[in-house]
Image (cartoon, rainbow, N blue to C red; front, side, top):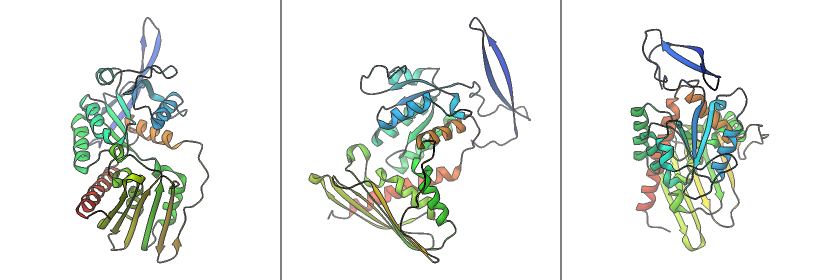
Length: 336
């Protein structure tokens, strides 16, 4: 949230009986005497629920139970998890119903780790219930739906954070440094991976939004020139090829290819006026996992340590808008 006036923060402590605990409370007030927009986020421990217990959801639980010391994520308290399956407890973490999570006054935020097709519905439910939300990409399976969710978050005065761990990976960070300030002549990004269930993940341009976000983050806003989708449903294979133009009318090709025999990998070829990049840079793994890095970013936003980055929101909406255009373009072209 953007602050329109200078804000002053100070700390105090309250003694609670009969438990005799000391709870530190962060209070904010403006020099003009107005109420701080984040004043409802005063207590240091913030209740969080994880929604969806797949691989990512279990990683979220692990990270919430073992936050980095001296980091904003330390102030997040895991209150339980929600799953459509009956799982019972996971360790000391209890399973609660969706209704309990939405209605609980002890839960202020939700981390949504469900299949793509459920993102829009669950983000809306938790925002309407007055909860902050962290959701895996894509935010929704259309740009119109995504914009409505951002608008709802603004109306409710809540943080809406969209995870994008691929932008946090060290090879990508080094690639971005190598691309910075170079003049592109032409480029391509080809991703391959195993089969996906499109009923759950959406059209390939949405399930592959991470790679599209790479290109937009590296080269700025793009214009769609053409797109094709080759699909062999019985073989669980598809290949989407998309042609873009940069603002300087430089061609970029993005390919998403998935099938049973395909290994997960990315191939790049970026030709610049000065040189050519044809492989991802090698980079050592960091000690902090990608989901933990993302959790810290979410916690920093909740704590008011990191202001809302409007360029982040614009990038997300631009990528979803392109994905919508690609889907419409491919639906208008007879399948090959």
